[in-house]
Amino acid sequence: MTEHKKIPSPDDEAKESSLLERASGAFGFDPFMPAPVPHRLAEDKMKRAKVRRRAEEKTEAPAPPADEAGSAPQASAVPAPADPGPVESGGEARQAGVPATLPPSQLTIERQVGAVALQGKRFAVDRELLRDQGLIVPDGAVNALVEEFRIVKRRLLESASQAGTARSRRVLICSPHPGEGKTFCASNLAIALAAERDSEVLLIDADFAKPSILSTFGLPKGPGFMDCLANDGIAPEDLVIGTDIPGLWVLPAGNQTNSDSEYLASRRTAEVLDRLSMGAPHRILIFDSPPALAASPAAELAKHVGQAVLVARADSTAQSALEDAVELLSACPDVKLMLNDAHFSPSGRKFGTYYGYGE
Image (cartoon, rainbow, N blue to C red; front, side, top):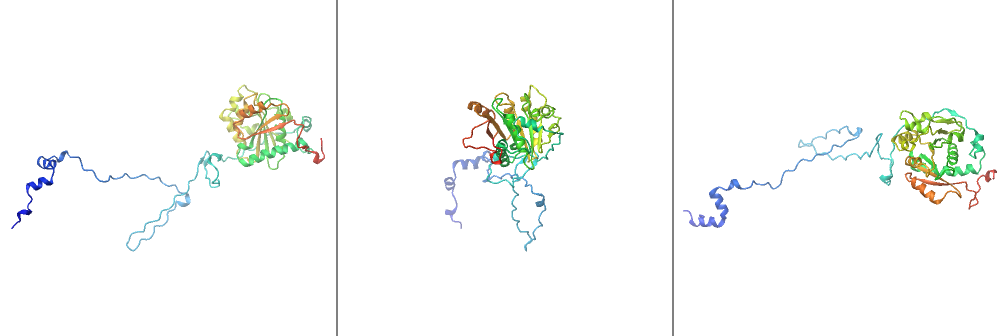
């Protein structure tokens, strides 16, 4: 016999369910209810980048043997190869040899190109003409002038060696005003650098308005630097003039133009200078430029050189002129000052007397 106390009564069901639940059961409100939401939505599969491996790592390892249960053991993860580094303009380059302490802002990457040989026709340089102008005479006696420019060239070579770039081997010789000795210093510096073993010097006449390098060395006139800037089809090495001074080459200024600053500001300038200097670690380019405060080409050339020598004449060049010239040459990362025509040394230094050639 069924116990009546265990049968639920309508009153008991009313106590257990709410009014909405009873109305839903009576009138069928289920279609108006929101769809059930799962507790956790399925996640989209992530796209993983494919790892590029080296040629020697492309060979896949043999599959491991299956275990006793018939399933292969889980393979251990293979670490991805190291980042190959930035990409140069001439191809991929790795930074394996770069010290870890070098900041990226100081890292200079150059294209790997072959050196352009300088094979221009050679002409004899009049030694007497050099002596009459007070210039260094190759294979001549060691005097004060030779020793002075030996010190100057050591500073330039040291800076170029520390930087180790083609740009650092381009040296601009400039002065604030005319008549302060920039051509004198550029010519002597080129002769002194040409005396270095296993090196060559290219002296470029960049004073397009008043070129004087050819007359200083007694060389014949011809096309030069401005001609290859104005014509993309002219190779600069074809316009270089050789000399009988071992290691010394000259690139004339070329034909005069009223747009010399505009030509120097074009992309062609970088192409010409890269062709002459890249791939030739033992070649130094010396530029004899116009005065910085008298013509604009000096400021344009400063953007393409790694070193600049600002020549000041003793008891003549004003400090304000030097400050203005340094500001115009600020595109060059290394500007040095050379005092010319100084007759007094506070330390009593007299080069040349040690060798018996006192003045």
